[in-house]
Image: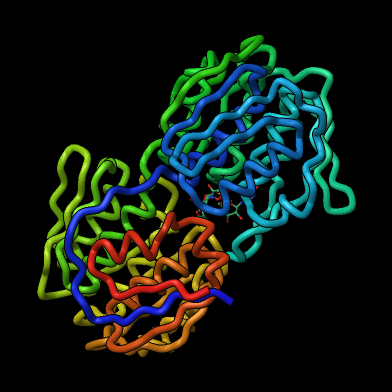
Length: 417
Ligand code: EPU
């Protein structure tokens, strides 16, 4: 079993670059299904979720080459299959992203309910409704969503709640449909914007990008392209918390501060000195961590994926903080692990009350999802003494070379295989 060994309590300092965004890279890889021409991607993160998506595309007949230097080549001219194996799809939620593109390109997709992080129920009912709205026959049998359509036709689709996944799938299915599709209450996350810009660069006609109403005028064909993925805002936030929680000064470079407005405001409310440049963010050493209130919400609200991470910081604030989770029912599962390090936290329904303690102490802990992993790494970096973190299969899904990046900032962290 692999684990991370961290000797905490040392301030981090220095500069690092953040990798490309996982949650933009995965749907963009899936969207490559929409063209039979060559796709070249840059700034693809070297993480296990990307390797799984590459396996899924290969299982459909695509050619995928990835040398781990951020560059990937995909060619889907010979798609032979619309039925990716359960062994891959069951490993991550984003595997369901291939459904819309397969339906648009081959007229059929059979994809099992996705697996991945256990954050509570992860239904795909809104994805299925969107495909039906566009004219597909969609049934759910033996654990698989089976969607078929001779032709897709543009339609107005009103989502009953904001969903990143359903917005992506509807958008990817609609780009080759006949006529105009309007997505109402669409997700506005930067990763959705990146996917839409990618599709437009392939020849799609999407407007309203970044707003809650996205309009897609179907086109007959999409072409190949070369495209660079946006920086990972969640990893940027995770590194900034690692700096703040160790009372260090660190700079994250090649990132976009505009993506992180609500997180930066929350860090400032927590007494942190944040300095933003055009493409970097610095957190400067601060003596105090102030209690604050966090409420997660769809973009531009506070991102649910940074909720567990900032909670680690608030566990050593001078007072009581309140964190409300509005996206996933079981996102607070990591709280028990932070308690092992000495945090004083209690959860009731969607709210977590955090009574700040003076310091955390090293202990063995386990990550149960990707962002719980980020939270535990930050907490262990600040905790006095040695911590062991297991559950690396989750951490490695979303954090590129995490131990080398943090070691570059002076952390005492080692991966033991
Ligand atoms: N929902 C439904 N029905 C649906 C789809 C979603 O009820 O058909 C509900 C979900 O159960 C959830 C809420 O709507 O309660 C929002 O889910 P959403 O579809 O927005 O999330 P997702 O697409 O499953 C993506 C990210 C998550 C991120 C959320 C919210 C990817 C691959 N995943 O998930 O990222 O937390 O959006 O921003 O993009 C992570 O990276 O660690 C991660 C979990």
